Length: 383
Image (cartoon, rainbow, N blue to C red):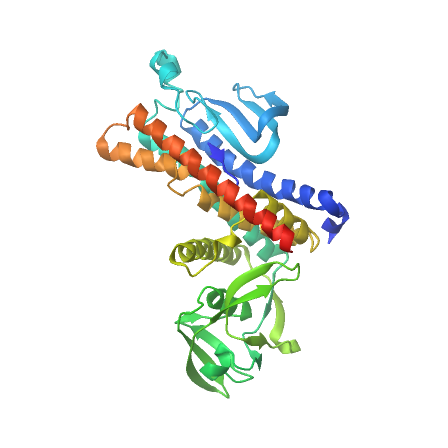
């Protein structure tokens, strides 16, 4: 199955190397675990795996394992694939002509001849592996490094901001938003950032009294420390930086897994909200990025240290897992769509229908890649 493109690290250096090395580090980990999910479930289902490749194109280096699988590193590091016995190509498009002439022994290890539930499990395993990887990384950071947090206490309020209009006051301690408990300032930011233009109910503690305020975050363009522009919902308040309001919280293993699931779900929810906003006109499509943007962000984040780069790996893993679940032929979600139709009909779609579907999927993926790369070039030109 194919994955589509989408402290000490400062020693990587600047320029091209400063972007390329962190980019390859992040992408290789994400792609490897995605394909490993496909590979392991395929082996469990008795499917013969012909190739396990990190990257596309000509092979750079590789070896054969005792089961006959060719493990290789290829020249174009923008994804990877696992090719099964019975596949026509790296996208797991079935070779119907070859399948028709297989012996019974060959059919027993052929992907195309497995029950639809087995094929669906193999396909779904890639994105699931990405989500598991993200949860493990987030949880590992919470256990080993901890999470720096600040209390959700208001320090200052910007004039004419949404917070001022809502009646916030310095010293207010935010307890809940729309009924969701707020443990720290980051919790509040996560909700507010995706709520631009939507009224929210904010419960605060003010002088020992609970007060409920109704606010509508405003959509603003904000620059991060690297100069990248983000469109987010904001209230217009700053956090308290008093010593009693700042702490680093470390988690136990079970609590950290829960925190990892929560962080993973936030990335999923934010991504879906953004895509929905693009279609409804609330968000701009110019935030969509491709390999160039990923490389740039990887290089920037690497300067902040190894933990920051690993955290980016988790975020990218979630994004790739979610992207591959979209019901577009060629992606894992497209295969799952075909298998769902097959399960409902009791037989697969015709070869012609599948061929047309894969061509449409290829066209969509190519257009998205061109669009994302165009956005990347514009972003570089204006940054």
